[in-house]
Amino acid sequence: MTEAKKTATLTLDGKSYDLPVLSPTTGPDVVDIRKLYAQAGVFTYDPGFTSTAACDSTITFIDGDKGELLHRGYPIDELAAKSHFLEVCYLLLYGELPTASVLEDFEKTITRHTMIHEQMHNFFRGFRRDAHPMATMVGVVGAMSAFYHDSTDINDPRQREIASHRLIAKMPTIAAMAYKYSIGQPFMYPRNDLDYAANFLHMCFAVPAEQYVADPILSRAMDRIFILHADHEQNASTSTVRLASSSGANPFACIAAGIACLWGPAHGGANQACLEMLKEIGTVDRIPEYIARAKDKNDSFRLMGFGHRVYKNFDPRATVMKQSADEVLELLGVENNPLLQVAKELERIALQDEYFAEKKLFPNVDFYSGIILEAMGFPTSMFTPIFAVSRTVGWISQWKEMIADPQNKIGRPRQLYLGETERPYVDIEDR
Image (cartoon, rainbow, N blue to C red):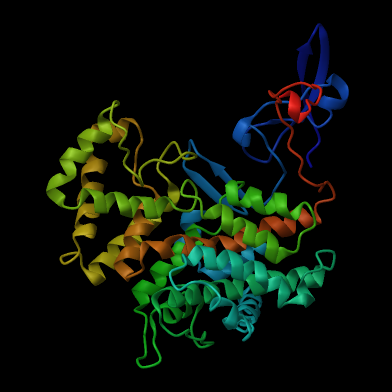
């Protein structure tokens, strides 16, 4: 924790309190209110924690005004262009880019952890066939603590390491199995001769009767999706993982909690909502009608996949994702897919329309990732599970950082109580 170099003064009922102001390596200063209740007897009120720093971290930094996203100081666009997902995983976990030999060892470790315990196959079959893949993932990941007892002791650094590797390695297998189960196809085992992204596509689209070979363009696009969603600072699901882990819960339970939070449509479901909007528009000729509705303040319709709560400029991830979308659509074509035709035309109009430019409603990462996944053949129900596969390394990195933090204590938000004050109990015959 950085030392305070200046203070802020709070005056309450004629009495002043000096609060330390902490300065980060980059970003806005933070007023330290940890002793405020003890000194002044008051809490702060911040629904959604939008103005509250709940921790200090060295992993990810976002500057929404600049459109900047850094992982351990490295810009996301450089990582997506020059790196690959497992290298980014190593960076997030350990703080530095690996050497070639270190990366090779790390990749071998992850590759050899991709299979899941054979008895877990029975766990999948306990779900209804039409269960949403995210429901299945929440249950199966939470159940990993029942199968991997040797990596649940959070006080043992070696067990934390093993749990981290297992989760990164097995999450694509679990997501692919959830997908296969939902469509009635047999599970496909992972292959050690494939890279992380190609192996995931293999497990999703191969069948025992026919070999599946992923086109390198599709594998690279999937790898970029993983990179661009790997971590995003203290978002809702990451905060959920940190809050769950603050109680000392095992890593599998904490990541399952993160998956459950990610499932919410306001968080991980944004690219699915975008595709559903495209389906509602239906055909290219109806786009002007929906553009007009989006501009109408009295119309509840909103263009999904445009703008971002954090980024007040162009989403830096969207620039890279657009490149992937263009490559994938060039490979697979859009001629026979009305949905993708609508997406491309909507993108063109929005990028040229002054209304969207003035309000900085640029296509975001969810817009492009949804287009890519749709073109690859994934149903919308798989969009959020793929997000979960990507974000697992971010959750784990944040979890490891929190466990090692000497300031770590169980999360306990306060409240502004507006209910009844104390009153006497009324016997039932007198009510």
